[in-house]
Image (cartoon, rainbow, N blue to C red):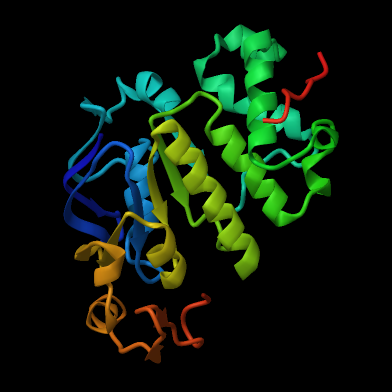
Length: 271
């Protein structure tokens, strides 16, 4: 489904963000990328939708190589969930979710906001499926909590039923309970639709709880690739260069605080 083949990224100032990473993510897998800030997580995700062009290697989605001449064709097949939500705060929840359909629309219809009835129905279903209510449809996004805004972001990402969703630190700005709720929602939405998810996180315990697979980066290289249950204190040290404070019952790693923060009916959308 998603294939990184010896990808590397070296910036003009000589900084190497990634160095020859090869990684295959099969269809339907929830894969979490871990690592310290600057390890290369965001660069890897941004390569997958063409926002960053590797200086070496190739990226393929569903067998299609990410390149300038394939972006228009492949980007509607990729949903994106952002750390800072990237919503239009002055627009309504419904308008923000409908925006997820724009990559598949003719330019003239997109500029005029002429969404089909099918798109409006899909937006309503998604808004309901992420736990928002009918009264939220016409509410400005600026009036929502952070957790509610990220629910809007998840609904928008699934608007075109993409086979791949990229989530770049989707819970970094949320409190622990809301983070748990949002990742639960993302995993459920993905599993119901058979969607592949590549998600970068800082919180190890959340990665161990929600991931099917963890890939850990350090200095732009893969230092761990395996099941969450195998992420033990020795792996922690290899990833972060130090030992964890403790191992909690059940094998969960306690992270040092100094560095790591831890259908009821279709809604009606106004025409």
